[in-house]
Image (tube, rainbow, N blue to C red):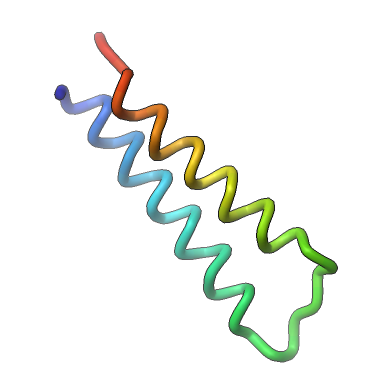
Length: 53
């Protein structure tokens, strides 16, 4: 694994954490977009495994 793949995995993790914080906030109701944010973060993180220079 290289540095670019690692950066992409960390970015995916940060996106998933953002979606998780939005989900647990009782004052925000985005109508299910929170789950979409978590799924996008998961896709970005998994794509970091196959990223080469």
